Amino acid sequence: MRALSIRPPWANMIFNPGNPKDVENRSWSTRFRGRFWVHAGKTFDSAGYHWITTELGLILPAPSTFIRGGIIGSVELVEVVQDSASPWFLGPYGFVLRDPRPCEFVPLRGRLGFFEVN
Image (cartoon, rainbow, N blue to C red; front, side, top):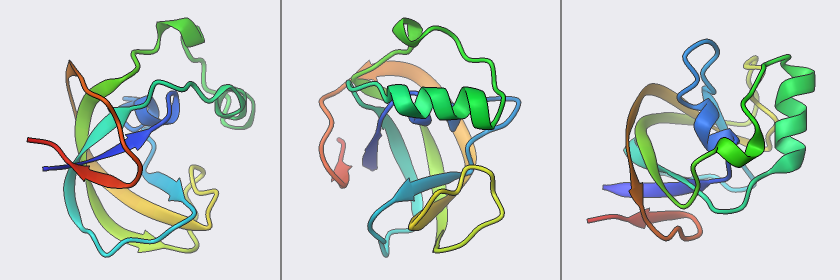
């Protein structure tokens, strides 16, 4: 199955039970559709953390508590859009996500773009 590296806290928000992230923003499009592994990257996005807490008003745990550097679950990519009413859409491309399924953490080195995981 393929995987996509996403920086914490964005990766973790896909599995947020109260307000799951239903769009993954990218600067590029893809023809891929289907379920993929969500890889939480090692680099934490502090600006994203600030945006999520201030713009969306979500209360998040401390940045140091986010698990990084491995698979944290899977989700289905159903379409790619260039506009969306979702509060998670920042563009220019949005990978529309559904059916998030968290899993036990699996340490794994990430890569750019979609990559195969055996």
